[in-house]
Picture 1: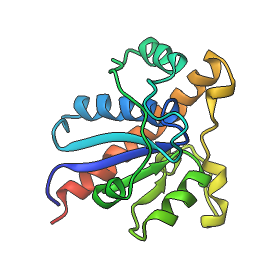
Picture 2: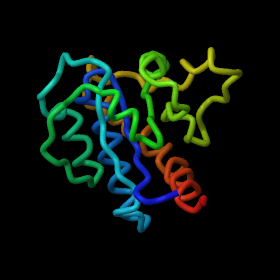
Picture 3: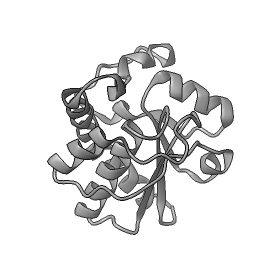
Length: 168
């Protein structure tokens, strides 16, 4: 596969989970020597937060974790995004269903599928077991829990990216 390998993370409004995942994936890809070979961006399935910055609590928790938090604006996923993404990582099964309604490409996966400690699935109807809870309604501890889940899956995602990049 030609570089770059394109990964898009998706949540509801694109101000909490998906931008946190974007920041973590970009940082870890750079640490793994994949900078320039892996492109990461995030979107939301809703336009309700369009133009808004990353949630201040998400930014604070990322900074606590040693990540740089770029200025960015929330945006809604487009069919164009889905057309160029090699891997689309949904934060919940509801997001995955909405994304699959927008594309027939087999690129939509659950983010936590790549976490070796995540629950095993008994098929697509069981995907909700891999949902990453929305920290929006909680406090910093909820955002910290989200960061732990995102970090747990990142190594598996980067392995998948390396395999795809090494494939003819």
